[in-house]
Length: 276
Image (cartoon, rainbow, N blue to C red):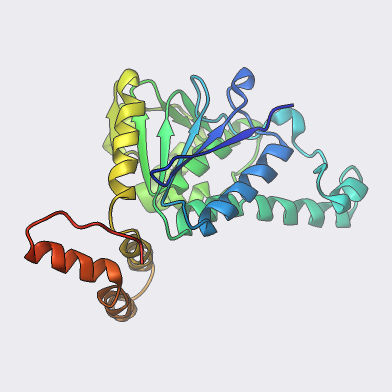
């Protein structure tokens, strides 16, 4: 059996994580969700990973959780194996805890100190929709589309999608997208601010590679603190943001990367960043 998530780390420091079940449009079962979380934990702390690209094999990004495995016990979790098929309070709490643990995948995509990119073609639905929204950037082929899907099976959503979507489009539009579960095309997503670029399908791979490489060659230490600053700006008071900006500015001002950039400016050459 092949792994549901493929890990490919290039010499450039760009890590590509691919949903790899094209026969079911990259729907992910319980074991795949577990593997994705482990890969993202590793990516967040791996010293050679500079940028993470999340994508799907074939013509789909990810159509969410495989409905055939919904509610099934996690084969890697002995507690879920013991209680997963029983209708008890303990079983309910065990499943809630498991879903909260798996949803840390979205938190890591959003919060890790490295840029994250969703490379999208075809459907991004359900859990796949949520994780695309969790990334810092979204580059979409012109055949990409988004569907929340949750209301179609009588559920409200998970993996942080309601949080990320509300941040991007506001509460009223987010409610419409979630409640109706209508398809959002790539062009509509661009107009709503859900994606950064829409490209012809044939150009998507090269454009994403160039986008990721530009980030990987940049001041990756500064990117960590840029993410912190911007995330804080979405929810904190101005005084808190000013304090955080000042602290992060001085941290980076004392870094080797900043010293190299200043020297390169004086010498009229491109800087060579080391991420420290």
